[in-house]
Length: 122
Ligand code: AMP
Image (cartoon, rainbow, N blue to C red; front, side, top):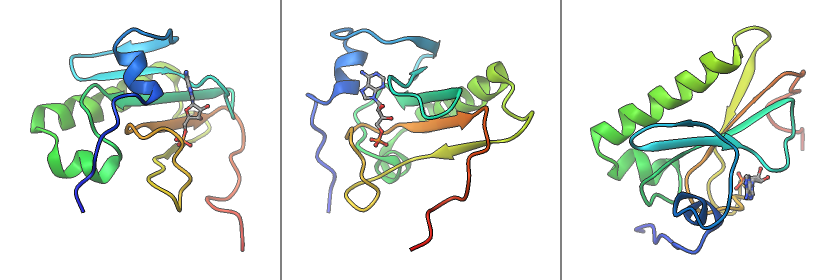
């Protein structure tokens, strides 16, 4: 099934400058900004500027330049925030099972407190 991108999602609006954000890093193909409802002392979202719904969509269809830029942007944010000290977590929710709220690829960078187990036990 091909992914269909809805350009009315909130991160598309951020990329178009229609709503504000607290930018941490901007590169040619990526934007990193503070999560509006932080769940840890460090909670930053990194998004590609291209129209990708989720990580597998991006990994399958983005150009090499976009993928390199995005991966390096995550690395740069981690370096800026010093997350290697104490550890951190990268989360990319996709679709219904993962309760992805915003249908534009974003990874969450979380750090600054103990983050608990990867998933709650069922
Ligand atoms: P997800 O459930 O993985 O789709 O996460 C979406 C994230 O986007 C949540 O952590 C929200 O707090 C965050 N969020 C929603 N609207 C905004 C916004 N305008 N600026 C920054 N973060 C936002």
